[in-house]
Image (cartoon, rainbow, N blue to C red; front, side, top):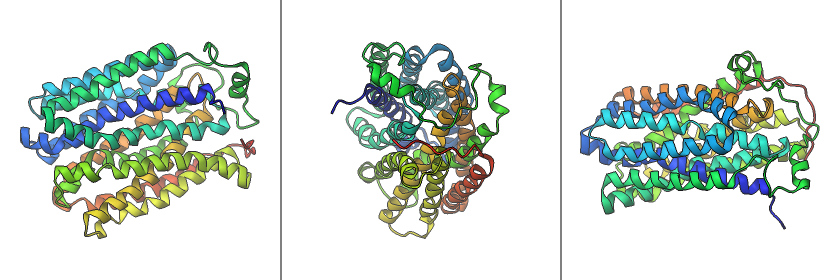
Length: 420
């Protein structure tokens, strides 16, 4: 059976997301080595992490706006070159302040990845397929983090820690060239058939976007109830992913006594589970629509609710004794977070016009990263005194509160979505 061009496009977006997260995850894997190399404390490391998060947070709505203005072809390629060069610059760090500066540069440029993916989903997929498409490109975030430990530790062992950042940066430049050569929007792509173009533009009788004017106005987005129904749950959910991305290796070393070899062997497992969560959440929503005839928005809400309850698993990490049990619960957390995160991100493509979806998605992403950055600083300040366990318990509470907010604020007409 012939695979539609839209699936090749989302595959290319997925590879870009993998390389984006490979670059950003390189630091967390190299952190034990760099802490020894530069005598960095846990709190100083949290400041390095926060430099990335602050830059990423500020830049997401700007990146989304630029992508909407420039278009995906040029915009995504330019940002990919930017994050690749910034990642290579980490090799020149001489201490935590310079490391923080380079992480800030990386955050400014990597901020475009998720808004770009959402814009691609909105442009290339009808509403009924959007959670599936988001699930596929969103696995790039966990897949990049999953392959980072063996690649980074292998580079460190063979050529020194500097090589880890150079290798994971150069591959992004190669991808940017491929993207620029291969990508065109659906209206201009010479390989897109008329039948598939008609399928992509078929809304299937589903909900209408909230923003129909096409004006790239941040104020207009901020005034909508729909935006806050996404932004607040994302603010509460993202601390979990930031914690998993930046602190799992340190936690396993400091709390469970694992060495670098053990981390390379096992620390990727939660991100493999996260991949499964991305895909499961993507297919779960259309299954709910087809099986129970719920509305498109309700299907997204149910996916988020399921993921939030599964987050109770990593909240219980403090009850574990063995490293294996902790890793299993981290796997549950990775699965749960990516399931609910994918549904929340897809809502931006569902609720906002294609011409403003990257802007809306970027602004919601900023809210998410404000939450993640704040919690990372809390971990840095309290992990050495109160330990990690109470902090992990907070992650489940945040997601459950976010679910309540989503159900309360997001009230769209109860139109029945067309099953695929």
